[in-house]
Image (cartoon, rainbow, N blue to C red; front, side, top):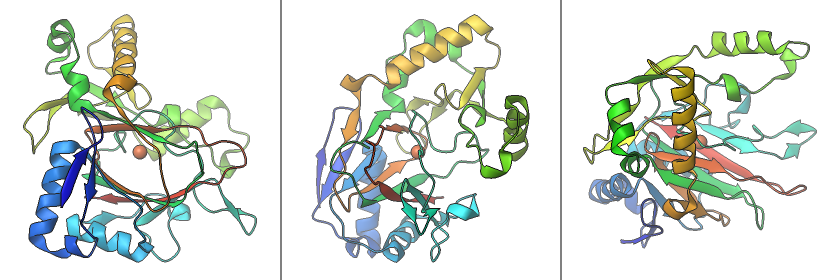
Amino acid sequence: MRIEKVSDHIGAEIHDVSIRDIRVPEVRDRVLHALHENELLIFKGLDISPAEQVELAQVIGEPVPFVMSQYRHPEHPEIMISSNEIVNGKPYGVPRVGNFWHQDSSYTDNPTTYTLLHGINIPEWSGDTLFSSAGNVYDRLSTHWKDKIAGRDAVHTVRKRFKIRPEHAGYSITELMKKADELHPPVTHPLVKIDPYTKLPYLYGAKDYLDYVIGFDANENHEFLNLVEELVTDPAHGYRHKWTQGDLLLWKTETAYHAVTDVEDNQSRTVHRVAVK
Ligand SMILES: [Fe+2]
């Protein structure tokens, strides 16, 4: 097994290891160790079936079916289909997923540990996934801000990114916000967390899911969220993944900030996601 870093602060390509190899506990443990060190692992061009993706998820933990049943893979409820394709006149999956910087499911009480994303139908260009390390973002905060946020909690909500569904036609914005809160009540998380593997601090939250820091006034909140946005999106500290067919990405849910870039018009893009506890 060969591990090759793809940027200074996040991501490594992993070579010479097959999905079959990972069933062996010692190999699995080495892969997980590499993941904990690099936040994101990239397996290039894997020709694996949806069943094999689920099996891999089972080897590293417990796959958790996606909360919205209409977007689950018909044969594998553990897989959420992220897609802009229309099949037989119906959306094949959820379009425009994750096109903003976030840590997966931070608007829920108990986000999963890992995310596994497999590229099924990849456009020739566009639809890249950008990554940034939450530990590195914390490190780049000034001492002033580190002191200011120490011990604070923040409220996360899906409100700003709630997806409007056909049954919401006719709702006002206020009614939509209320519906979002009913379905996904706001939750509180520590703003700085400690990575259980590296024992290092990382920042938890970015402006789309993080609503406000408890104890900050509106100006402080605004200033802080803008600063975080600046740090998270700085390409000099991140990694841009340009997908090729079959790529499989595995990342730590809480410490890998990511965002997908826009997909060009008339380009199809489908990826299969499995969340692993
Ligand atoms: Fe995501």
